[in-house]
Image 1 (tube, rainbow, N blue to C red):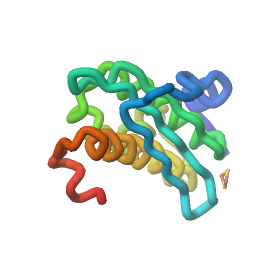
Image 2: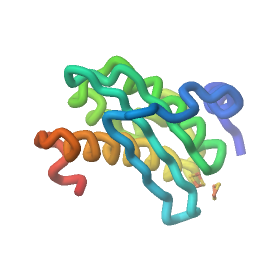
Image 3: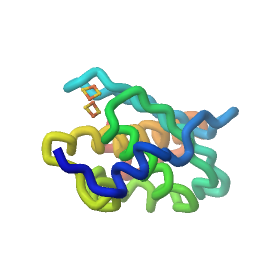
Length: 133
Ligand code: FES
Ligand code: FES
């Protein structure tokens, strides 16, 4: 299987690994296909994602996808972050092998789960999340 240089880079040197204490939102999702787990922590101020960290118990593609996804959401508004699809994450990594595309789905779902958690904690309504839950 051929992995892009970017996938290898983000797998070997993952960005934003760890946790955020008192995170504004935490999302944890699992991949039913393989049992892998991804957890995303968001620090949100004035509707802007100031910081993002992740913990992923999973394959190299899941780790690279989480690393890239955390880089992509940092500095974005909640609405911009919700527009990030797993395809966009995979494209930013210069592609994933077809059998590994499902790993990038975890990243999209974990970000959404963290934003749902944030919305619930703050009692706010985020229209884009209505179809997710
Ligand atoms: Fe679990 Fe990919 S099958 S690491
Ligand atoms: Fe499980 Fe990649 S094979 S997330």
